[in-house]
Amino acid sequence: MDSEGVAAKVADETTKPASQEDGESKAGMTDLLMLTDKSQLQALAMLLRNNEELMMSQAIKSETERVEYLKTVSDCYTRTMKLLDDSMAARITYERSGGTRSLVARDMDDYVVYGLNACLQNVRNCCVRLDAIDKLRAHYDALADAVAEPAANVEGLAAEASEYKAAMWQYCYNQRSASARAHSRAYSQALKLEGIDFAELVRRHQLRLGYGSKGEEFEDLDDTQKLEVYNSIIVESGRAGLPVRMFSSGRSAGGPKIAATTWAQAVSVFIMAAGNLAWDVFTTEHEVEAILKGSLNLLAGLGGFAVEAVVGAAVTKAVANVGAGVFACSLAGFVVGAIAGLIFIGVSGLLINLIIGSPRKVPDMSKLMFHTAVMPDGMALAYAVSH
Image 1: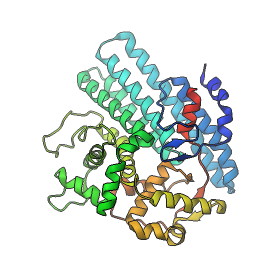
Image 2: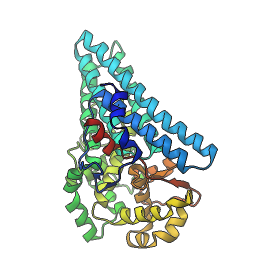
Image 3: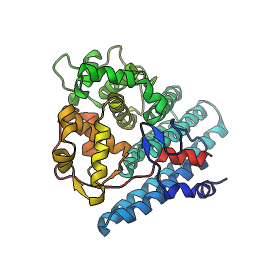
Image 4: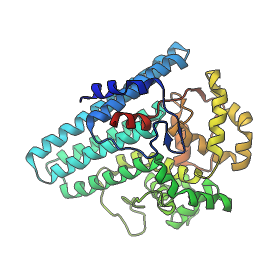
């Protein structure tokens, strides 16, 4: 069955976006179901587009804003389809000639499939999703260019692609799956009992890895080092089996693991996934996300609101309990999963960069305007597509 046929089969799912609490979807699935059939993944992209187009048309009153949002929704779909087509075409081409390049192309294709599953199932905010898809595309292009070079270090690229593929599977599966979240529940509870906030947790792991002996703050680290810190938290919590150091920045103890040809592009893909997964590890036993969800739902009928109003009124209790910095980080992580479905254009980078770049700092959010709507749940739709 082609993607349109699969999408039509589950069209009834698109009229009632599934809710999700603590990793459990309305469809009854508690763990993410990785779609490896390309037609099913294409169908999921189509269902999300159809849902989001309808939702944007109803939720956003401003014609100018609505056109901008709808373009974002359309771009998510078209860029997903193009990336799937290109990675499959490269795989077929290299498999015809055989050799190590065919193994690289196979792992590149699988990496793209896992990465798009992560984008479509784990990122409910379409604006953030488009940014994630674009980063995945840039990394795929870098890999494709590298493997096409006649003098390429094919064996090195094979090791790279294999590790990228394995890491992406871990990030994707363990973000929202209830069984994975259960592994980090005791860890999160212990942090809560100790009174350890997110910034202190990050600091502990930063120092453990040897980054900070000269007084460096987390935001002073390069992206590779930040990724190592987040992976260290994820691994210690039992949440996922990630290598703490995938590819070294060159300043890590022990030196580089692999001379990664495309690491500059890869780190931008992984750091967002790792930062938000680390935040989810921390919040498993915290109430701030639930309080934030309830507060935003109360304001959903207003159409647009300033984050400052939320911080100043509806979630005063949450901020008082966990600190303004943790609340701001929670908002950044919350926007990615978007249980309440915050949708916005042009400001996602500020909030997302907070959680992955400067966990001790709180930006001025008084002028950030949002719309609220219950966004489609890609995880629930993926389950419907597969059945």
